Image (tube, rainbow, N blue to C red; front, side):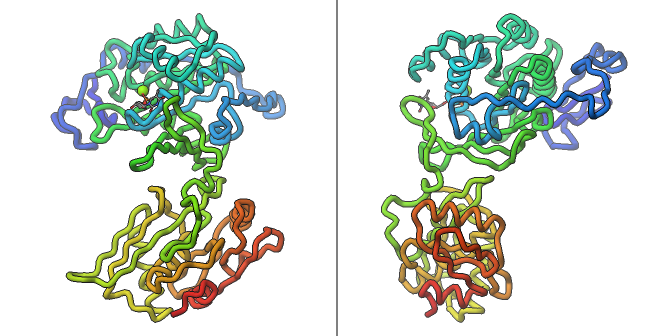
Amino acid sequence: MAYVCQKCGYRSVKWLGRCPSCGAWDSFEEISQEKETQKGSEPQSWLGEEPKPLPRVPSTPLARLPTGFPEVDRLLGGGLIPGAVILFGGEPGVGKSTLLLQIAASLSRDHGPVLYVSGEESAPQVKLRAERLGIGAERLYLFAEQSLPRIAAAVEEVSPLALIVDSLQTVIARADGGEVGGIQQVREAAAEFARLSKLRGMASFLVSHITKGGGFAGPKTVEHIVDVAIYLEGVRETDLRILRSVKNRFGSTHEVAVFRMGERGMEEVQNPSLFFLSRDRAPKPGAAIVPVLEGTRTMLVEVQALVSPTKYGPPQRRCAGLDYNRVLVLLAVIEKYLGVHIGMSDVYLAVAGGFEVREPALDLGIAASVLSSLYNRPLPPDTVVLGEIGLSGEIRPVRKAYERLKEVAKLGFGRAIVPEQAIENDVGLELVPVRDVIQAAEALGLSG
Ligand code: TYD
Ligand code: MG
């Protein structure tokens, strides 16, 4: 007999009112006798394979299916792999069901049957959404169901190439498996879908809600079971959505794809590299453009600064989308090495468009935007800045400078202020190498 915390999975031999691990109250549930005795019996076979010497393992190239969304394919590492288990997380209302229904429709149209299981909405409700999205796919099967055995039976019957489970937290793995959406149900369901996927070569998308404050088991509790974990996020007060990979056994992680949630569902944003810049690109005091890396993608972001004399009270330092402590260090560095006085000024910093960037390569952009606002002088037009700043004011190299600068050239910029070590001749840009903040300020026309 054992008791398990439904929030974090902590086990105890006796019932506890409060979980010593995660602090949740009244979260313990008894695990059934049956399940405990099962622990001793032979575990269920995974795929029924035998150990083989390496040379005898067949080398099957991973066939990848295009999802109909090139950006999603890129995020997945080049398309959907049969048998892949993909965790699809996000807060309620962000657009998970919408995007997955669109992907399901496209996969079914181009490649074969897809089973969309909804435990949250009835089939007619899902159909209504499909109609709004202009989706009518013959081989897309809808199934409103929560019971794991019945979903497994439907998989058997439809034999889909892809299964969508919307959501994992509504699946009831077993009648005595604790509360629906609890850790035990969710983990068991995820493990069973993973097994089915591997066995059948069927790709699975497992939707998981992120909820603030908890209440049920979130995506983190099953990340270790899946091959790929992607999260859909909203961008503050916009209709933009960013899909981000945090784990990928078939490709690189920290890739992003940008979407816009429109009247007819989610649309891929075609040129996300330029998306977070203002349309006119006219130079403004206090703005610096930096090529940052999101996964393998270069995105241009605009760092904006406002420096103004403090009217009362202690000087303010505020920033949005940037690392606050890093900003304080950079302000200290430019004060010391450039001899500027901002100790009696308020400094506000933000990344335009609500984007969040935590990359040392942004340092020079932060410093440049502060100086630009301080002197009320815009940076030279069509110029980007790139570089990490060290504590003695030196400009340090950044990773993948060459890739970033290639992209910058492609997007029509003409000049880049870069760390000395970043020099490559054929990027198609005028490069201005700088060794320290003093040289950088000179190159930008911002030295006092
Ligand atoms: P939904 O996909 O249901 O979110 P999730 O599954 O992540 O909870 O989308 C929720 C919101 O999206 C809802 O407020 C309505 C809006 N929406 C659109 O803006 N355009 C559309 O075409 C659709 C179907 C929904
Ligand atoms: Mg939904």
